[in-house]
Image (tube, rainbow, N blue to C red; front, side, top):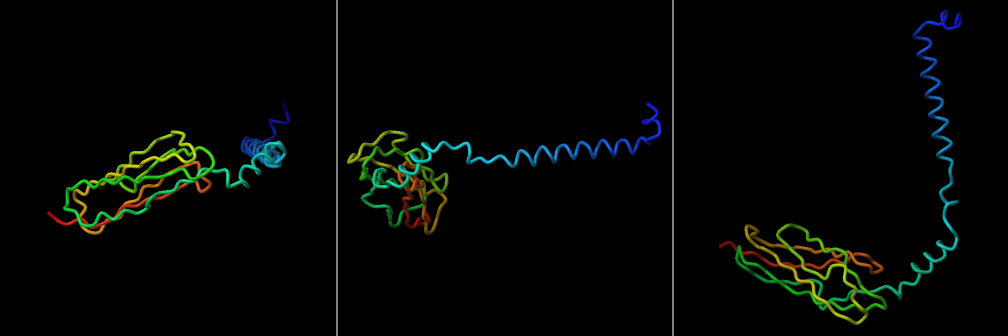
Length: 162
C-alpha cells in the first residue's frame, strides 16, 4: 500500500489510461490480422465462379420499345403506357423492384413473379402531368435477376400549359 501512497493521483490516472489504451490497441491489431479469406469454402467459391461466368444461363428482359414519346399533352393529363417485355433468357426472370424518377410517375409491374423463358409481361407506367409544364423525361429503373441487374425504361414528351 505504501507504493500507491507515494504515487500522485494524476500519475496513477495517467498510468491507468496508458494501460487501457495499450490493451485496446493490442486487441484491435490482433483482430485486424484475421484473414477473412480463410473463412471461404473452396466449393462455394467454385460454384459462384461457375454461376457468374455462365452469363448465357441468366434471364434476359427484352422490350418492344424502351423509350416512349407521348408527344404533346395538356397540363393535368394522365399519360399511360404499357411496356411489353419478353423473357428472352434461359431461366426464370424476376423483377424485384421498379422505382420511378419522381413521385408523379408510377409503375405497375409483376413484382417477384417467376416469368418463364419465352413468357411475356407488361409494365404499366403512369405519369401525372399536373404542374409539370415543359419538356419532360421520366425514368423507371427495374431491379431484376438478369446479368446486368438493372434496366431503365423511359417516357418523355412535352406538357403544354392549360
